[in-house]
Image 1 (spheres, rainbow, N blue to C red):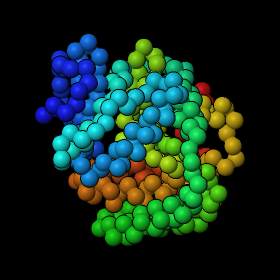
Image 2: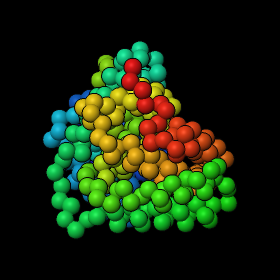
Image 3: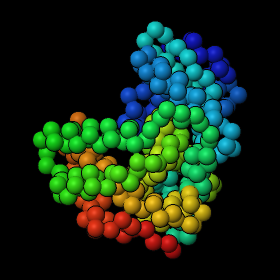
Length: 296
């Protein structure tokens, strides 16, 4: 099956990984010298998207952070492409972090923020690109999907109004490389050191957009979520951050429920739960600093 991939063979071990939402097939690989890899197999139609992912990851390699590195990319066969990455050692962060002291939870969050800042520091050419144009299309698409959704979103009218009343505040936002799914579910911890995995959604966007999945961090550890923000900004939060975070939180709620309806009752329940939590954290969007943001 993997004859076209000539990298550190013969491989000693090949184990399929069944976690995650991606349609890619994923494998844990052990090479002939005991080096470990992550192999992803994707549909051939995604060639250009995956090539862009590899290009971004090649830039991230220069940052000297504990993150996946791209090693090889190409055609597996006429129907599939492959991507081979280094394997980042560690236990799942979402399981490790709650067991740590409050100080260590916060410190790992700070580390995560520093790493994210480094990712966003990579110079890229954004000539001709406009985040405002992209964002208007994104909001319009989510609004249409939400209105077509057969399940009612709690506080729907308040959330929609908040997004449309406030989206102008991102008109002049810059564009940077973003991880695209930056939360504890895509992090590991090894001997107290944080590792970043799964760059499958890497893209170009407003860097603040990378804070959007904060709910998954807060559920695990509000202190980690707080530390991530503090570490990113070196403990000096700019005035525009929390208003934009509140906007992106409301916008994410608009899209979560329609997305969840494709995956069944459990995901629908989760989407509604997250929506209610976000609404509560921002006091019905009467406040822009969420209630969970508290330094130890």
